[in-house]
Length: 303
Image 1 (cartoon, helix red, strand yellow):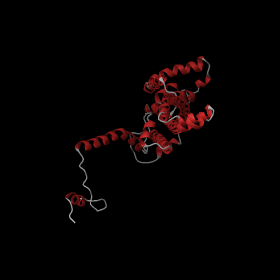
Image 2 (cartoon, one colour):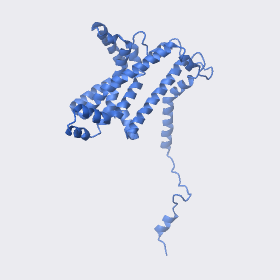
Image 3 (tube, helix red, strand yellow):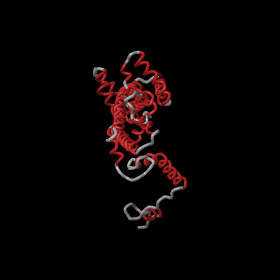
Image 4 (cartoon, rainbow, N blue to C red):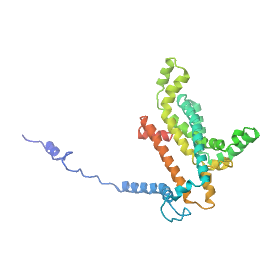
């Protein structure tokens, strides 16, 4: 039986599994240039972090003087109460600030997603203002406000260092949680909440079992992000702290005057690991909720 020209050409083409590798497409010069540029940018961003992690294993007296590899810096942490107290204050403050930010941000995010209107854009503008305001402005504004509340009005709770640091650290984190929760709910239909109301469920029951359940992945993600953001609130902490409650970032700033020691890098490495674990948990929580990689990135950035 005679074959047509088309059939002959099709049979001559290699098939998958025939052991013939398809020719690899040539990469253009622009693709190679963009890849090289991407590597350079990544090195520029992460090389300082890699250096500080390496120098945390320095056995020398000063951070910049490498004497050898060892775990002396990590063991020194256990011998210095000042470092332990600074880390403890930072962790407690970050935890309390994350709770405050999560509570306020969750309510704000749900309100913006479920009750849209012109007020939402005004409120988003205020949140954006909180996000972009320089920390030094927040610090200068918070200090006299805390003094006024604690001394002039007699609210002694605002004389406590932990309270001051927690309130100051929760400002920016509240805006972040609001963005994340709103981004989670704004694309979800409200049919379940309407059905719950049609079945004569109380508003509190609908909020607890439906609305909050839908927003829970974003709430957990917002809590973890608020915790990590509150760990390094340096400028505000330097202004509002009181004696005896010095957080870790302020301790590092004061240590610069006498020379950075390897134990500073060791604690920084531990906090970096905590941050990475928190971010990994955020991604895991959102992935368990069924979000794709794009949705996870969108939720974490509040987009």
